[in-house]
Image (cartoon, rainbow, N blue to C red; front, top):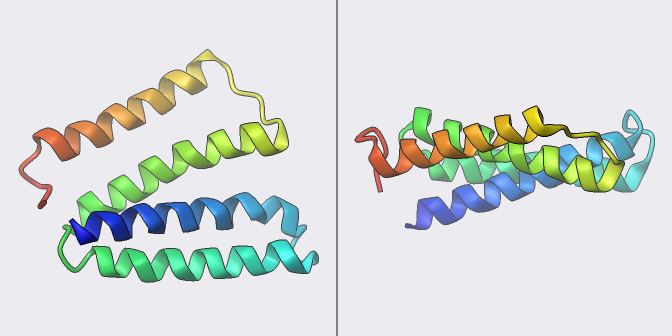
Length: 110
């Protein structure tokens, strides 16, 4: 269970770091740049802890899938990124895929 908590925080750290990339303006704006560096550093550290017990394929699939959906939603809110029905459908498919992987696949170790 601890690994899933690490993975959750790894995802959140990566979402914060990625969301701040635009605001960093090519690393010329110091405060968002610090959030990018710290966010990615923390995300990869926590992901490494996660992968001690969760298989790499499962951990990375969850990390990247959930992260992608959360980053897209964050940019929709923060930067006014336009999302249409196919975008929401695609994000829904990603979430369903992550749920199937974790609830029904024997590849996931809990």
